[in-house]
Each structure stands twice: as C-alpha cells, then as structure tokens.
Length: 216
Length: 216
DNA sequence: CGCTTGAGTTAGAAGCTATAACTAAAATGA
DNA sequence: TCATTTTAGTTATAGCTTCTAACTCAAGCG
Image: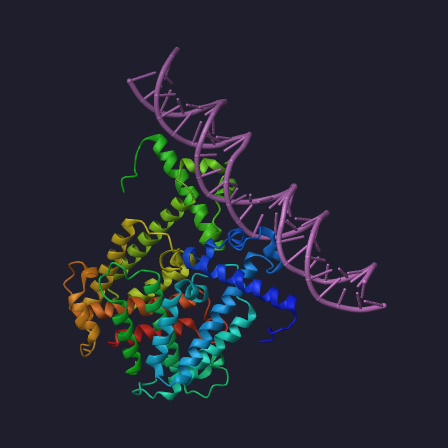
C-alpha cells in the first residue's frame, strides 16, 4: 500500500482514520450498519462530532470505506484458501469461518442493498478477484462429468464475468453453483433463520459442500 | 380476519392504517427499510407528524407490521403454489415472481438482520406454514433416490422444524436444499450481484431448479 | 342534550448528519 | 529564527429525524 508515508502528519492522520474505522466496526457488529453513528464514534474517541469530517466526507463515505475493506478481506481470504490447495471444501470452510467471524461484515458485502446506493467502482474489481480465486479452485478439481444443459451452453457465450480465465463452461457452472449455494445456506444461518429449527447449521453446510464436490 | 368491524370508527381507523402501510411500502420500495420516514408518510397523507402515533406505536412497530405482512404474503404464495399442483418448479417460479415483484419486501423477510431486533413471535408460525407448504410439495415429488448421508441421518433426529409432517429424512433434506439454494440465487440476483456479469439470472435460476428436481 | 372517546393539532426534547466560522498548534520556507 | 501556511479540532447552528406531552375539536352514544 502507498500508505506507508513517513510524514508524521500523514502517519497521525492515517492512525486516527484507522481508529475511527475500528470503532465503526465495533458499532456495526453490535448495531448493524444502519445503527452506525458518527457522533457516538467521535464521543468514544474523545473528540466532538464534526471532527470526524476531517477524516471522512460523511457517514456514507465511512460506510463505503468499510464495504471496500470487507470486500478486500473476503478476496484475501479466498485467495489464501485457493493457494492453500485444500480444494473446494477448504475454500468453503474458509468462507464460512470468515462469515461467522463477523456476520455484519458479511452482510456489508452480501446483505440487503439500499436502492439508491452504488458500491464503489473498485469493489467490482475485487469481486472479480473473488471469482478468479473460486474459478482457480473449481478448475483444479475435476468432478463427475454432468451432462451439459441449457445453463452451460448459455455460459459458453456469456462468460464476461470470468475475465480471461480459461475455464470450460462446466467449470463456470460449478463456480456459480458454489457461490450461490453457499451464500444461500450461509446467509440464512447468519440471519438466524435456522435458530429454533433444531438441526445443526454446520452439518447442513458441509452436506451442501459435499453435494457440490460430488459434481452436482 | 376479525377486522370486518361494522363500527364506523373502527372502519375509518383500519382504513387509515392501510393507507399508512401503503405509503410505507412505496417508501420501502424506493428507499429501503432504513430510509422509511414517518414524517414523510404523514406529510404525504396530509397530516402532520405525530398523528401517526395514533395508529402505530412508532417506526419499529410499523416496520414490524410490514414484516408480518411480508411473511403472510409469502406464506400465501407458497400455499397457493403448493395447492396448484405444479410441483417444485411451479413453487420455485412462484417464489421468484413474488421476490421480483417487490425485492425490498423479500429483503424484509430474508435480508440483513438488525442485531438487536427480534421478529414478532407470530412470524415463526408463518415461517412454519411456509415450510409446511414446501414439505408438501417435496413429499409429493419422488426424485432419483440419493444415498443417505450424514445430513439425512442428522435430520432423522432433528426434524422439530417440520412440525408433525410425516416426511422421511430424504424429503426434509430436499426441502432444505430447495429453500437454501433458491434463496442463494434469488438474493444475489435481487441484490444486484449478477448485474454486469453478462449472463441471464433466470437461466441460472431454472438450472438450479432443474438440478434440484433431478434429485440432488 | 350532555358526556365520553379519540383523531389530529402544535410545542418541544433529544438525537442525528452536516456546514460554517473560528482557534490553536504544528510543519514549512526564507 | 521568524513569518506564513496548513490543518486538527472546536463551538454554533441549520435542518432533519423519532417520539412525548398537552391541548382542541368533532364525532358517536346513552
């Protein structure tokens, strides 16, 4: 990062920025993104209100920054898991661990969208990184061949999202299935929709991962 | 419903309540639940601010009411689709139609949870109705038998959520898969995570439904 | 006809984001 | 070393929000 400025003022500045973000994460973890209050953060940091505007353009800007960091963190987690060579199941476990570590961070990426809000442009690049790591793992693991269907032939012509990754449609298909299915179980678990149902979320999760690994 | 009171005062009251909720839905559709403003609703209805407190205990109470209605609407949609006899794919199509009709309504049920907030107790009953309808459809459709795995044997002992539905573990398993997988694709589509990726969300959705119908 | 109930009002407290104007201290350059 | 510029943080204030309190006035009912 180009943030290693020896400039003492810059150092102080970036440290305060980090403290603000740290308090913001705490607040989000306990109150959700909608409950994030600049005033409360300022008070916790011992400074009063409008001082934060020296560091962030406003509440939206701060949240945008947190979204960016959440994306970055997820992409790093995916990359590390992909490079670890533990396959799809390793990637899945890493994803679940990352999500459970801070559910609200997960929801900052995959949660309810605010109709007007557009994620910052660089998050789409990070999202590509995530898909790239996922495609790497999917390509390395050859599952029981499933018969090509409508989706596969559709993906053969619509794989812009895969960048220049040299993966056949069957792999693209599996990557999408991995993404959507694990998001399905995970987000329901994190949102608490399984609580009170009696079964163990992790068992369901691993079953879904196994089904994915057994090729479809 | 016990709301058919001939009492003129009651009639007026419930009509205003309905108008408030209607405006609230409009606002939620365009600004999300976090952007819902009682003042704005009151202004739109030609009355000033605190008048709304005659009809709802406050903002949270209004939102809770909307959540309740969203659950009810989804349960009715599931029940109707189940009774229509169009099978799992019919149920899936109905679910997607319901979600696309008003994405923010979907997110009111399945979106980012507010850490402190607890859904009203009667929604858990409605959630049971939804699962019951889903189980009915799953039980009626016998798929290619898959070999019992860890999840199935776990569900054999942990099926409290299925109420007294006489469904074997394999059916419970499929119902959970239906729920989590379709939520996975749907919520990502609704949140806009597919936009700019190039492929058609509906093709992905139907492929996922087909995979589900082909037993696993 | 009189009393009670309740819908809607204005006033105001407490909170929020955000802007403007100001102070004080630190870094910088001649 | 001293003057200038930069900038962190302050208070004050506008404009929004939810929500409570006190009041008015009209509709319904015995």
